[in-house]
Image (cartoon, rainbow, N blue to C red; front, top):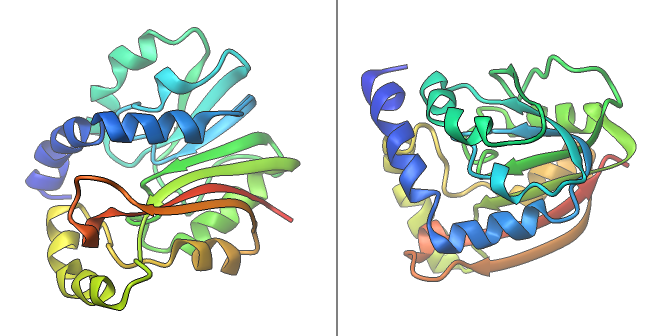
Length: 205
């Protein structure tokens, strides 16, 4: 990991991903979480304020040590245990059927093998558990998709490997999960190649 990705990008993401609209999405996606939750792509802990009192523990997976350092104040403010349990969403150091829920926000765009990561999420979920997700990805309109494809290489370089054009529902379903709720929309105030959102839940069955 180079100087930019390691030292600069986490600070940029910490600010950009705390905008009002993003906080509103986080609040919706975190609604209904309870029990033991695994978060893939913990980042700087921006989802923590939206966890309800019904969550008893959060096990977080995050590859960036700088992001974890930036999250320490938010972690310290929590009344529940927050544990950093791994660095790679593709290889979760957790037991099968051990999580009541998995939370994943704006992470499947960056994980090198997102299908493997989703299969790992399904593995650690209890039979009645759910994946709660919010991701940006491939837009439904041809003209916007063309721009996403054109800009994707630049986005990968400046966004730490982030992809604009991943088909998030297809990735989730190809990994064997069933989407139980899906809302799609263009986020307001963002150029459309960056703005198409997938927000919902999925089960491991």
